[in-house]
Image (cartoon, rainbow, N blue to C red; front, side, top):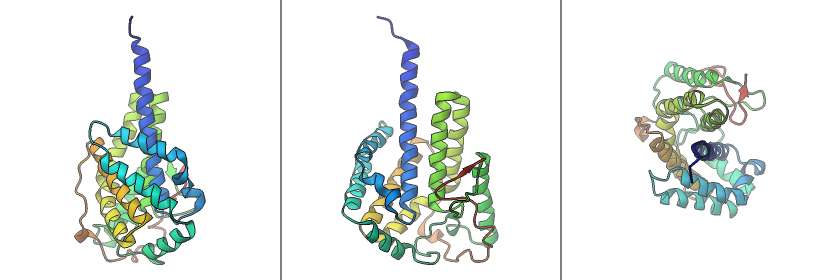
Length: 264
């Protein structure tokens, strides 16, 4: 019996697209977890679909990792979320984040490594440049600074989703543009500071759901960088900039929504 090469190719593309969408959804879920907790945003963690999502995510890294730590992190997030309430999470989140910009576990990239406000503004401009290159602009619904952890996670979600769409509809050339952007953004931005952020956020949480989410974030980003063969200089705690970005105007420090990018 002959093998239909076109059918095999279609199956390979379908498998690749499934993996991309699974990884994309994980970035989106983690993005939501670092926002102020609301039932409508976090309800997916109680869904049976999330159990299947976890299995699919582990399969994304077959061949490069045994998935043991990833499985443990996913299981812990589900169990701890199921054992708490949104009201409790809201109180805990406020304790971790505070009412002003946290110096212990900042949610913003430019509080890591950048020593001067002008350097911070330059970094913000570079991040915004990534977003604008893909037709993304400020949301009118909910504004957040472009270097917020949730915004950067949402951007990675968008790139992977766009790559999956390109593979199905436009071919390898368009898909590769998204791959290159993912690698560059991991290397120059989220991959440099988010692992340290996850450690600090988990430390401030001490225990419970947010500690588990922090561990999942750190492990997920480790696997993402390994899968995409990205190496970068990850910030250490000594690189944390204790000076807030008070010297920059709100216009400089706000450029994208954490929940809803606008596409031009």
